[in-house]
Length: 303
Image 1 (tube, rainbow, N blue to C red):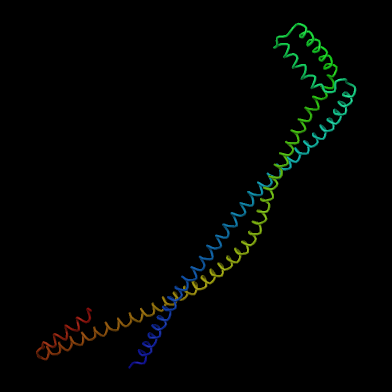
Image 2: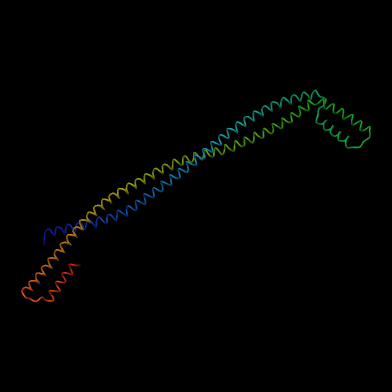
């Protein structure tokens, strides 16, 4: 056996061994790549979900901050309104105290202690005179009494005006106090809403800090998976380059063997042709076996 051919066969055997080994490693790497890619994409989706959640909470914080600031501004305006209203009430109360003092002095000086009562009596007499039928003397007496009552009522006009002002001022103070209380209630309501928004802002801010930590960790895991994926992928490319090189060498061996086979068949045909020519020259008869052997050689060559 030719030592050179034996060496080539051994080298070819080694190449086939390396080829199979690399093919198995490539298949294993492809499976590992699929697994790591799934992990990588999973981390990426988690990171995107966290980022999206963070953006939503930031938008919510901005919206709540704008609402809170608007409420704070409204509360400030209402407090100013309440302060002005309280100041106005204080002024009216001070005026009311003066009016009551003045009315008390007028009531002390006036013979009429209760002008409103006199006014009621006057109204009744006027209605009676207009609607009831009575004797002349009775009508005369009622008219005289009405005249005296009106004179007393006119004399008490200052007290009546003061009393009317007191009544009106009391009504204004009551309305102002009601409006002030309504304003106070509105302030309390808006302040509560503002506080709730503020607490929600603080809560979301803390939650965002926690989510950012998770987002950072998730992104770190994603980058680690990506690096691992790229490392394996780069090694896979190297193995593919090597296996393609081995495939080329194997194909070269096959080509050389094919050329040797064809050369051997060509020489065999020539040898058989020479043998048949020699028989013809020597006048020997070509047998059926000779033709069959020659046809078999030609057939093998064509195959």
